[in-house]
Amino acid sequence: MRHFLAILRATALLLIGLLPQLRGAEPTSVLSGEPDWADLAPYQKTITRAEFLNLLDTIYAPGGAWKATIDLGKTSARIHPPESAETDFRLEFAPSPEAASPIPRYWSPPGAKKALPGSPLAGYTIAIDPGHLGGKWAKMEERWFKIGDGIPVTEGDMALLTARHLARRLTAMGAKVVLVRSSADPVTSDRPRTLRTEARTLLAQAGIPDPHFGYDGPNDPDKSASLQWQSELLFYRVSEIRARAWKVNQRIRPDLTICLHYNAEAWGDPATPQLTDHNHMHLLVNGNYSAEELALADVRHEMLLRLLNRSASVDLPLSAKVADSLARATGLPPFEYHGGNAAPAGSPYVWARNLLANRLYQSPVVYCEPYVMNSQPVFDRVQLGDYKGTKIVGGAPRKSLYREYADAVAEGVGAYFAEKGK
Image 1: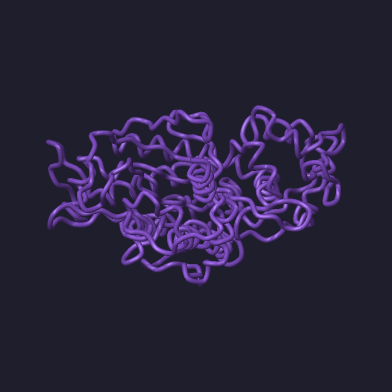
Image 2: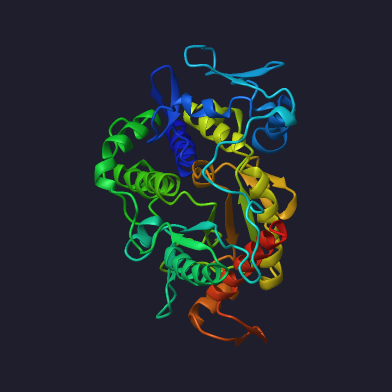
């Protein structure tokens, strides 16, 4: 039982890229490098103490989660690992908002450029990140199911189709649009076989020094204790997202990143999936870090980069605007979290949660999770495929699932940029 619980905990942390590994003076999360605290140096005197504390307490680390790793003084904050001062970093505060230095960042916020009639996104670069992987990789990710001879429900392929529709809409509004993933294949050069050493180390940390290699399908109760499954998880859930983040931050350098996902509830055996009547939607902004998460040096470093570049000033209002647009288009109720890993973030549809993607991407992020893929209504719409115009669905004319999603996101983004660019 102890080993089983350890595996469950390790797997839960791995799902968001947080399972710790020891590096030098303090732990970091899996597959991360040691953080370079010099990255924070350009932010000296760009933020006041009051704003820094407000962002910590209301968005990033509520409930005092930051207090074990950040010492807040009157004129500066000391960033340090627990019980050590070997790698601390001191951030100097601006004495007043008027005296604050300019914020260094590669992106321009909405309103920085005057909106043109019909082209509210002119001059902006937008990255679209279609969640997960498609094609042959979808079964490995367990984001695939099929009923009879019907069309498979495959999140990675559905997200990519939605992304292509969204790209056309945003381009028509003047944006330069780049897809982070333009095919079913991964961005990372890693594969499960190249990550077996790391997977073996993680299993040993969970109390399994000599794991068995394979597992017998998605319903195998011992799959999480296998080297194969842990290697696969590292591949698609950690290495893939880290590779996308490098591409976003180093190559695309967008003003906004839009992450497209479809939600799901447990469906059991993908060969005989369980459908549900539940259907809902929500959006996620980066935040709500726990003290345990902030004890990892790279996580603390990444949180501070987002806090200091003021991504939240765009994440929150823009996500609320897109949520309103999606709610009107879909008619879906808001999803509600009941655990401690997420917190309300203004709109009933928007929640703050620390995910690997919305943490690593250094531009503002709109992270969408509408529709429950294994709900009966969504399954039925997947079977209709993609189409122009409308069809009668549930007694009312509806666009295809993918165009409805893309159009609603485009409408929200365009409206927000148009308002800010007046």
